[in-house]
Image (cartoon, rainbow, N blue to C red; front, side):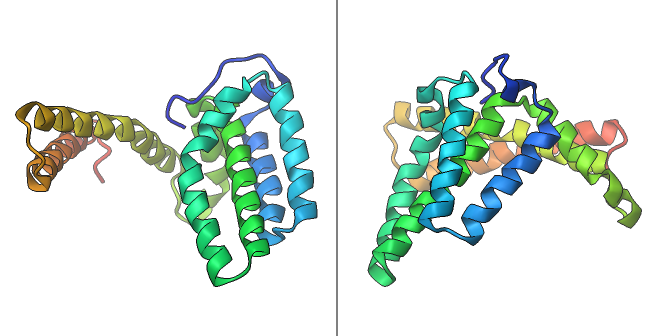
Length: 197
């Protein structure tokens, strides 16, 4: 969700975020519950059509799946050695289609639209004490904080490389201190806006 939106004018881009999230759940559920070749093949075919019509370049969609390759390979290997290779193939196919579907949603929907959809979906939960706007704020802050923390880690890594140090402690302590400092500043900003309760 971090800056993944790929601008476009396709039907998928124009579809409301709440509907896309609903369809995502409907698509992922059968693959997770019945990870068989027939179900996964049908879902994969639908995703292929959605990808082509979304006008998002295949390399962009592929870049969302690429980071999963090592994890999926290890999981499939473990499943194959401890269970069956058919089960390993089913696991590989079901997780790949799930990630592919989620990638299409994030590539064709802005983060703001996704957060607004989550808030709208949670509105009925207000009756049981859930504050949808607060949940949306927490999600927005989380999404915003991840690249900030990644930037802090990169700064410390570059400083450590410049000193020629490979110490784990020399890396972890500055990252931890900067993270806590960032959290304190964010907490003060929220308190100043009356959002500290």
